[in-house]
Amino acid sequence: MKNRSLLCWNGSKKNLEEIPYNNVLDLKLLHGVDSQIFKISHNTENFLNDLSFNHALLWGVRGSGKSSIVRGVISEFANNYNNFIALEINSEDLSDLPSIFLNFKFEKKIIIFIDDLSFEQNDRRYIQFKSFIEGSFYNSKNKFLIYVTTNRRHLMKRDMIDNERSSAISQDEGIEEKLSLSDRFGLWISFHNLSKEDFLLIIKNYCEYYNISFNYEIKELALKWVFTRGNRTGRSANQFFKEYCSENKIKI
Image (cartoon, rainbow, N blue to C red):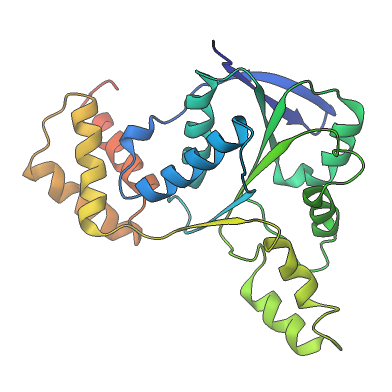
């Protein structure tokens, strides 16, 4: 039983497009995020088996694997469950969510994935989105689970929070209203820079996966690479590995 495609919302055409699960990173290649993978997998399994679940907010440093984990987990469950569809929507098209549920009929459960979401000053989309999460008229007949990734724990810049705190007549009218959106997610999953050891283990995992001998030269090159980048993340590890293979004419 396989469910090997997802729906992507085309905001310009106002239509849903069916896309195969291509270029999904094998979760076995990720290291240092076992706890995060377990939480997402467990929550998804509960949702698909009619058990208690929570909408989840994955937040933290750029390139730490948030999107890869969501896509990887959904792809794995698509191999064994046929009772759901996955719907990916760009953060810019967030306001289209109510109309999607109003104009399209969904027969199965829905896992909604919104990547890299954040709000700027005077952005009113968060009001619509909060209403959607709580269960508006448009989506009340559908059972859905939402996964959102963001670099910001409260979905907005820290200076915006501080500015609104200082200028609002009442905190309840300003900043507390905006912060209440992140409270709608029952599951907060944080991501941080990797340790040097975990970063190198990711490189080692890539080498083992593609039958490349991990050696001192690769280790030193990886450490020099990440030093110039200034951060140790899964993305920088993946970028180093692809660069190493490119320089050495290794097909992966």
